[in-house]
Figure 1 (cartoon, one colour):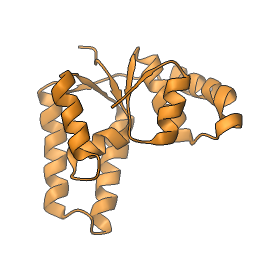
Figure 2: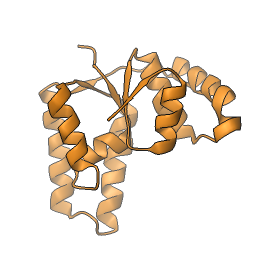
Figure 3: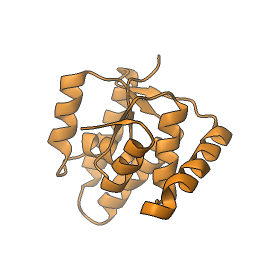
Figure 4: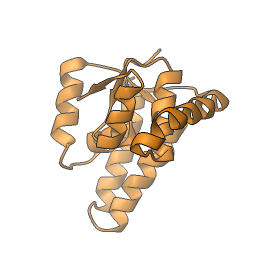
Length: 146
């Protein structure tokens, strides 16, 4: 099953923990009933971010475990869809995005990778709450939401 949209980690984190964008992430998903790409990069980045907010006391251990379970349930329910990545192509695309956009706006490598993965996976919609990443995705031709 192909995913309908590519979420960056900020969107997935907000979907699975209560933060300033939690309601907006849930509302978007409820309105659009989209399936979301989930890659090996998401797995490590989202889980690590949840562990980090737990370490600094913004989330309890129980809330972190619940978020991990919710991610697994979303995978089982095909809200999140495992998406295979051809990493060589992703890195080539990320390098091209860097050449095209980094000099003018400055780009973090992780932002380049997320947008490159979205493009390589055929996504048309990019979900993010990160302002810089949203601008890059839009410049690269993706529809940016929410």
